[in-house]
Amino acid sequence: VITMDKQNRKAIIAGNWKMNKTATEAKALISELIPAVKDAGCEVVICVPFTDLVTAVEMTKGTNIHVGAENVHFEKSGAFTGEISADMLTDLGVEYVVIGHSERRQYFAETNETVNKRTKAALAGGLKPIICVGEKLSEKQMGITEEIVCLQTKAALHGVSRTQLDEVVIAYEPIWAIGTGMTATPEDANQTIRAIRNAIRDVYGDVAQNIRILYGGSMNDKNARDLMAQSDIDGGLIGGASLVAEKFEKIVNYNR
Ligand code: PEP
Image (cartoon, rainbow, N blue to C red):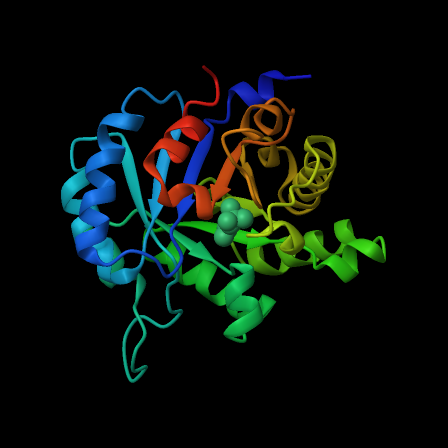
């Protein structure tokens, strides 16, 4: 059942390019994307490698494509060789940032604590965080999915004010579904997303109804419509399928 609450939340389809596309390749893909997604009914976001951000921001000026980074450091500036601050991103015109992607949690020692620090730094710097949460296959098999994702959500949002919460987007990405071709069923994804929304309601009250919570994990042009028909799924975070203009276009236009 689609409720009024869902209609009040503008859907987002966000691409996560991961470590793909040189600036030269980004230019080619964005040239294809601009006309392909121009009539989208949802908000369209592309989260791209740091080295593609200037190209992406310049090329998408005056279009309906919003640009995000894939990570942000939690300190404002200083001796953190190799890191990128929120101010560096907003100064370029970057609007969103992915935080706590499972690949960062798995390969780069990202924890609930660092996710929380990055979230607060992003918000303080004027970026909209897309915070990723999701259970491992073993956790799903133990039946603790909701506990895991609610814990991750509450930890990520610790110390975030009610006003700042409006800028937050959550992406529920079951880890076993990322890049595997396995998708959560629309019903299971919706149930977990409802649990996340309830966890936000525990802390912030009814404003939880305004928070956009996306699904991610092998979302494609075939399954997008069914996922998006659910009461609490407000969009998608798309990995592999965001690298091919025709595929991303079909997901963005899931309503047609
Ligand atoms: C992701 O990396 O956020 C993701 C959902 O990847 P994929 O769509 O390829 O599963």
